[in-house]
Structure formats: structure tokens, C-alpha cells
Length: 259
Length: 293
Image (tube, rainbow over all chains, first blue to last red; front, side, top):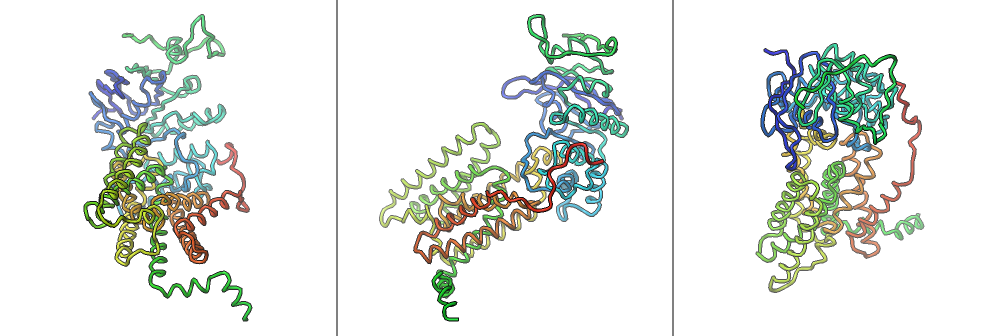
């Protein structure tokens, strides 16, 4: 009985002939709040899909709560990126959240009274209670985001996976959002894929750098090297990132040993 | 009183009602209404899953089945449904496994299927079947047993969609999430395309294969904006289809024009009317992000 929520061991995954993940190994302990960062194409979204059971590893294993992800799908919450949804789809906020209660065993009726109550509660918790009957396309980006989180929370999961959750939220909304995640972290493990290392660094507990392999850092720290993997920065090119700090930046990550 | 009747007589409605005493006209109405039911349900799923092009591909490839049925002396339904299902399954598999090449392959099957059908009909000795009736529909000559088959297929589609409603909804809105929740998305997708292939063969008789697309897509397109659930969208699609079909039949009877094309013209007018911006009263604009707590 391990206290690890996710265990990835010697994971290999290739897509279209390209190796995306190469001998990746790391564990996520219970109660963690980990940000997965890395360059585009480095494999972080693929890694998340492998942890969710949407993809199967070519070699190696991915275990969630000690089992294959599909076996524990009711203990996992997932908030996808908001981009590919059809904004005119005829569905209400409540029906989107109810989707989180789908279980393959139950056929007819699909949703019980208890399911609906749970869905309403999840919406209320995210402050979207009054919008339960609104069509999803009529909500703003931030509101839609909260409905998707409610959908992920409705089964009261033990781990929450989020894929680029702040892609369509402005800066002020982002801080509020990560405060919300920090609050949720008191009840469940949180795994976030994000491009936004500058915003999340104050809120997360650990960082996983994903670039074919995975380097897991127990405390949220930032090194110049880590920044370089994401933003090409050298004397010749103009650095697109300008760090403004009060005092000396107080978090520094150790070097990756086996580069 | 006399001038009132005279007014209505000029519009042809009385003649239309009189025509209903003919069996062929009643059959045409029934075929049209059954087609409305089938197209309302399947069309909704086609539009929300964005497989309109795939549907066009199946419709045109189905002509290969018509040719096959004539050439091999098979009953029309067997030949056409078999060929249509095969083409549909291939297109479904391609759209899953090779997404970026899918529309090319669908386009190829679309044209080649049609060509196979035409050549096979050419090669069939004896009386050459009227191409036009399959291209543009022959709702006025639908035989009774085809009607019964349409009813049976309509009920099966209704039953399947009702049984798998929440799964189809989840798959159509967010396939990844549905998969995580254990919905068998791949099997459902093939089921959807299978039902679509059979439905299209039925509808070809009503409006012809060239115009099947319109009946599948126009009513759901109109309904999508005003409905709040997939079920409502299906209901309104069926109702709109029925209105278009009945109006189109009346026009074709009154003005002696091709029935299939008349139906689609009415649908087209409905489509353009629906594009006129119409704000439902009493709904505030989308709230700002800061609201909600």
C-alpha cells in the first residue's frame, strides 16, 4: 500500500515514429501539488493522457493508486483544455457536470436523483449554481472553466488533473484560479500541466520537468536552466522573459544530474 | 362563404387534401414524415459530431450499391444497404485511424462508389433503371413494403438513440472525457455511422442521394441555436423536417415540380430565414468573469 498517487516506471511512448517519452520514471506522492512543465513536444500532455488512461504505453507502466488508470477512473478528476469544444453545442451547464457522473455499469436510468444533487452541489461549490440551466456557449471563458472543474469534482476524486487550465484566463483570473487549486489541494492531489511557470511557482509544492525524460523536483524552484528549456534565451537573442523580483529570487532548483 | 372557399381553392390546399384520397399520395406523406423522424434524429448527431462530409460520402457511394443490386439481381434494399454499410465502416475506420487523410479518402469513396454504380447499371442488360429517381428521389412511387421497412428502421434508430442517449451526448460533446468515464466511444462511433448508412439508404428514396445532405443538416443547423439540449434539438429537427417535407410536397403537387427539389428549396428558405438575427427577449449579455461568488 504505497502513498503514491501516480507511479510511472520506465515509460516509453512514441507517436508517428517520434519518441515522445523515453524511459520516463517518477512518482507523485499523495497530497502533492505538482506542476508539469517543459517545452512544446516535450511530452507533458502525452504524459498526462497516459496517466488518465487515454493512451497506452509502448513500454513500461503507469499506475494510478496502484492500478491501471481505467480501473480507477472514478477516483480521478480531469479538466481538459477549453479549446476544442463546440461553443454552440446544445447543452446546459448542469448536463456538462452530470457527464462527470457517467458510469459504464448503469444503463437505465442513466442519472439518479443523487447524481443530480451531487451535480448541483458541485456547481454551487464553484459559484456557478445560478447558471445551471444556461447553455454552455452563453458563459464566459472563466465561467466555462469553473463548470469544467465542477464536472471534474462531482465524483469527489482523490486526484485532479488539469491540462493548461489558465490558457484562456487573464492574469488576475489566473492568481484567483491557483488560489482555488491550493484550497482544493487540501482535499486531493493536484497535477497541472502548464506553460505558465512564473505564475504557478508560488502555489505549487513540486515541479516535474518533462522533456522526453522526467526530472522531479520536490520543492518548487526555478533555475535559469529550466527557463532556458522553455524560452530560448542567449546573449544573441532577446530574452522574452523579464523577471522582476522583490529582493533576490529565493527559490533555486538543483541541476538535473544526468543531462 | 363562397369567396372564402374560392380563396383557399386557389392556393391548392383543397386539391391537396383531395389528393390524399389517393394511396400514392398518402404513401408519399407517410414516407416524408418517416424521413423527417429519421433525419431529425440522425441529422442532429451528424451536425454536432461534424460528420457532414462523411454523410455526403456515404450517400454518393451508396449509388454503387444500387448498381450492384441491379447488376446482381439482388433486391434493392439488400444491395444498397450492404454496400452503404461497407463504405460507411471504411470511412469511419479511416476517420479514426488516419484523421488527416480522412477527407481525401472519403472524397475518393464518394466518387468511386458513384462511378461503380453507374457502370454496373450500364452493364445491366435490358431495361435501364431511371437514374434520376435515385439522384433526386421518387417519393411519389414509394411502395408499401418500403414504408414498413422505413418504419421499422425508424423505430430501431429511435430505440438505439434513446438507449444510448447519454453516451452519444458525452461522445459528441467531449469524446476524451467520455472515454475516461468508460463510455465505449469507438464502438459507439461505428454504431452511429452504421445507423447513418442505413438511414441514408432510406432517405435516398425520398429526396434522392444528391439532396440527402440538406435534409440531414438544415433543420439541425436551425435548431442548434435555439435549443438547450440534444433531445430538444432532435425534436425540433424532426418538426422542422416535417414542415419542410409537407410544404415541399404541396408545392410540387400544386406547381408540378420535382418533389425532392421542392422540399430542399423550402428547407433552404427556412435556413436563410433562420440566419436573420433574432434576439430572444429578456436575456442579458454574457456576464463578466468577476461575477459568480
